[in-house]
Amino acid sequence: MNDGIDIDTAVKEVFTDASRRGMDFSTAVELDVVNRRDNNEILVQMLVSEGKEDFVILGTTAIPSMGYQVKKSLRGPREKTSRQREETESNPVAVVKQRVFIAPGPTKYVDLKCEEEWSEAVLSTKNKRIPNGLYKIGIDVVTKVAVVNTSDEPMVMRKGQQVGEWENAYCD
Image (cartoon, rainbow, N blue to C red):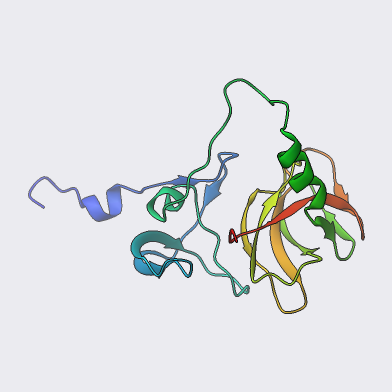
């Protein structure tokens, strides 16, 4: 410290969510994650924050290291094949378990029901405030999903409201 600058305190790395709001983390960790499907073990870097919930939210940077990928079609929506239509029609609907009021700005956790008794499921939704992703389904066929109200207006998620579709996380 001959020049008088302590780099550990002078440089602060700022993390933001997709809406560019600042995010606070306690620490960063590297964990060995085991894929239950093929028993592959992968070292994944994660940021840890304090919370009351018993679940993990993986960021988009963890997804590729776990062997998954997220793709966006450059051509826009395509006409589905008859098999895709059949699969879509048979997917269980994700519905809100109980009414939740979300003021402008904050994130709230909303319980979503899945009609199937899967241990994990992929949620596909068109609601930009509800993230698509892989979710652990509880014994009561319910999972908690973080919903972010980025608008200037309050938002109400109504009991029984359909917000998307579930797909089995494991292909048969």
